[in-house]
Amino acid sequence: MKNDSPVQLDKVALSFFTALLFFTGGVFADTSWPQTETGASSAGFSEEGIAKLDAAMEQIVADQDVAGMIWMLAKDGEVATFETAGLARVNDQTLMTKDTLFRIYSMTKPVTGVALMMLYEEGLWQFDDPVSKYIPEFANLNVLESYDDEGNVELVPLERQPTMRELLNHSAGFGYGLGGSDPVNNAFRDQGVLASADLDELVEKVAGIPLLSQPGEQYYYSVAVDLQGYIVQELSGQKYGDFLKERIFEPLGMSDTGFYVRDEDEYRFAEVHNWDEERNRLVQRPHRTDRPSYLDPDRLESGGGGLVSSTHDYARFLQMLVNEGELDGARILTPESIRIMRTNSLRDELNLNGGRDRPGRPGIGFGVDFAVVYDPELAGTAQGPGTYYWSGAAGTWFWIDPTQDMFWLGMIQAQGQRRPGAANMRQVAVDLIYDSLAK
Figure 1 (cartoon, one colour):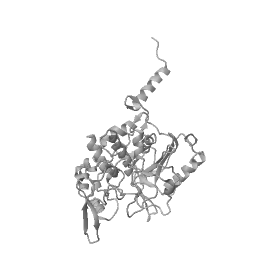
Figure 2 (cartoon, one colour):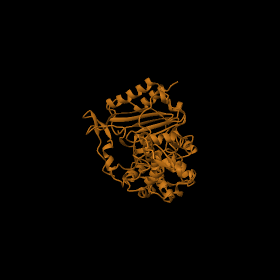
Figure 3 (cartoon, one colour):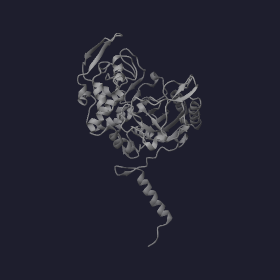
Figure 4 (cartoon, one colour):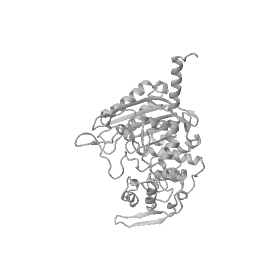
């Protein structure tokens, strides 16, 4: 029998390696994208414009506005730029690299929204359902009517049950504890709601705290997305993290994304920094001691802010959204569901951060765990109508412009005080990107 040639053997080896990359639904898929940029012009931008963008981000790092940054811009599936600069940890001078891991905090929220919409497609809930249908402990919530500096609080009963739609767009009335000096947010902090051991404990604590307003009256950024994670867990019968891994992370090849950092990956984990006025430089922030470490696999699986991820992984999640629910043969959601998610669902008189006594941000509403630019002129942005976005407490941020099939992803780890005169990096990026679009 004739021996196989070296070329034939190489082809067999390549086929076997490709098969090992990833397997989903009977289809082999290469989940390595994106590893490198394909270039400005191939993505529909001017070379000069992207060079200016890269230089601007590098200068932001050089000026110590942040210790380090990774940034990516992609259009039509082509990566215009994917670059890194600076340090992941200033104490030991660890460089920021493309496989650095980040606390993405509230950029967890869109992932939770996608998970809940998967169950919506299965007919397990409807937008007008009362939240108490899935969390019975919320059937008899009270509402904060008034309070004074002497500690007097007046509560009133619900006029109606908050709906799932209101839970998804932060108008259900829940507090959070991240800010505010009112009795509701004080209770979130005093009871350690976000430091709960698990989602069951979190729900139990929230059930005993009144709402900030009657459902639908105001937008309050809230614990709503942690509650959504609990609902996913209850409806699916799976632990929340297991659902995300099986239904989203594995199909999309997001192997670096989860609720804790594995021991073998600790060296890749970036630290959070802030500006120190006395030392006139950036310093690493101390780790929190009021909740489990990011190295603890038993951390709360917070749907509102618990995930760790890499630039590669989150870029794949964003490209799936750009593609209206699909990436590399893995169908996560239908196009209709993605369009629902990126459509403003707040009442006409409400905007992002708005209510009866707060005007909010003109031209910007909220969909399913995304802010949505429904009127770019009112919002004062060059971004296209329907652009949707969110960010994390340590500075990570993204936006998707569906009119251009384009996304931006910026990964940093910064909280607290900033350098005096620090650049508005988000606005700088938007201005240079839209100036760089090929006419």
